[in-house]
Image (cartoon, rainbow, N blue to C red):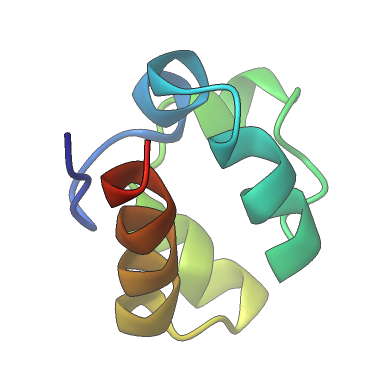
Length: 66
């Protein structure tokens, strides 16, 4: 299983229990907000000033180890 930057935050939260804590550690503290559920990971990263490519890579590393 892998993610990409076009995936919606809502889908990522349901995908694997390790993803929400990783997003929180990256600085996305608004995961429970209904508006965030419809944002892509790339859009959320832009809003929070996070390097999306790095975050996608980190999440995919964790998912690959599962």
